[in-house]
Image 1 (cartoon, rainbow, N blue to C red):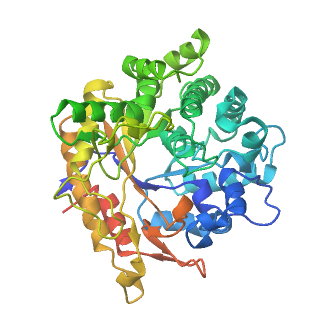
Image 2 (cartoon, one colour):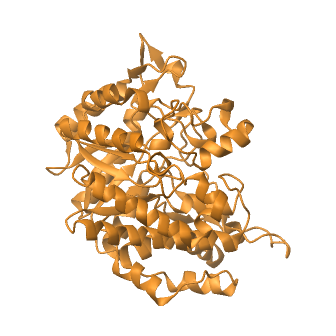
Image 3 (cartoon, rainbow, N blue to C red):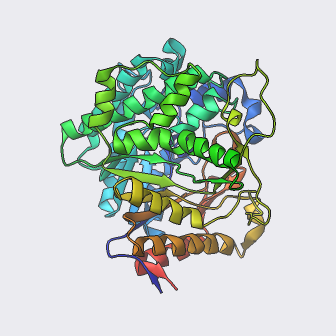
Length: 460
């Protein structure tokens, strides 16, 4: 058998905005996604928005029972900021406060470790409308107050806190490409948002340790390795920039307390270096995370850009690198993403060699499938492809741990098929099938297998 170290944790990750949904008079305020869906419903796959999702707000008790049935020893979810503070600041929604209290208590009653993320792309819309969201330092202060409230309110129930999930994603898709709200195309705004997000994360780390020095807090990053097309200097340079932008922009300040000099120089060269002062840089330096969450789905393969950029074109990441399709790559035929398990090993080595071998968790890894209902047999989805995908990745993770990687747990994406932003329910990732029409849940073959994996702390 492939056996993991004693105490290794097994579970899944999800988020509030992708699962909870809304009911009448629940007191929740709009976040960016709620507002955008009202504004441009046509941009969401099949017109499905965040109002229903997986109805966890209604079904949380029975859903937590399913955590037990699928063998969870750890579970990562998130608090929706706008469910606690509907306007981002000020008045508290006590229904929301009590909801999370009951959910967290039930999870702890089941003896499942609880990892809670404070931000999963879901800024309260009022902060965007009134002050340009993360472009405004006032949002940093509002986030710090919200985070401190959560530490004080739920700290007795939460085993590990997360400041942000994949903070580079809103930067890239909200401020470079027209893919997330506020769908701006503005490099200067993008780097300002990135800096303010990092500052907010560091302030949350400080607040967490002030509330209780024993509390553990980290950040979840999608540390996708950047692999160059070739050894040509131009391709190597492209991969280096991709690594600076995609990974090191948050990894270095979060773990090491400083920004890479090379990244700072590039931003200065293009005159988009955000304003900062010694106090802010000191906060980042002195409040590094206790652990890392690592999300990994596929590698980032890059090449030098083929063409020169027009002088009037907006500054984009693809000025420096462009995606590269490697011949012979393995593909998930149901989703279109490359499958490359060795990326996990490379991530582990990087953390071990360059980031003090900080404690980390694999907080997302999984296989999305479109049209998964075609694999249903006798009432259950037989997702053997998902089981094999996980096994293949776990073999590589196990090898990395044997060689000294400080990984303490593996959390799949996701528990129950969930709503996925503009893609809605196009691709299913869950251990449990969701029937959208009835909101009924059905454990997939992978869900039963995952329980065996957890109970055995490994697999054949």
